[in-house]
Image 1: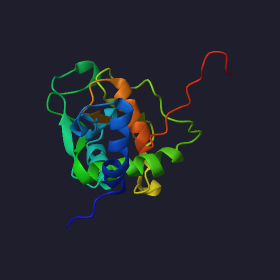
Image 2 (image 1 turned 30 degrees about the vertical axis):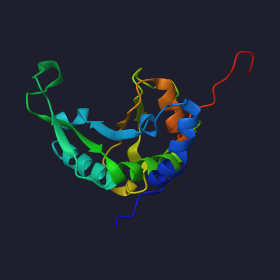
Image 3 (image 1 turned 180 degrees about the vertical axis):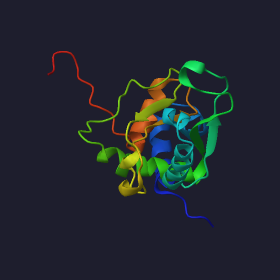
Image 4 (image 1 turned 180 degrees about the horizontal axis):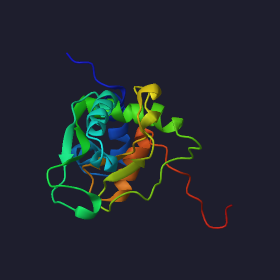
Length: 189
């Protein structure tokens, strides 16, 4: 029997039941859940140095605990010195227990390590219940050794949910502990 992650157990024991009451759904199967997390690192500097993609793949593998794939240019662009088929980034799709472990690490360890962190933007939903988050410095993750980093890389994290609206997804991520910024009401400073 596999050990389940802390957030997976919390979702099944607490979050699912409280969301079912809060959203007043007819069946427990209608409660929104997280389907997958997609992490992407675009590497514009990879045009001049091919080792950057290999280094980024290693570092992203350390962070996520899963093998990553390289992304390639679809078309040539002379002004950016890009040829078709040239590696330009890395990405990984997380599902299941690895996904919950990464989300736990992101919420409890990585995001609080951002300098002057005041919360993530609550307006980054796409209208269909999916949330996207950009991180400018990937060194906030504890697996990264700062001495071995050649240059700072950013990453885009997309959390795909089974919900079809932003409100339900917001409530789901809030129950998981996503640190959203405080929403100021009119008249407050």
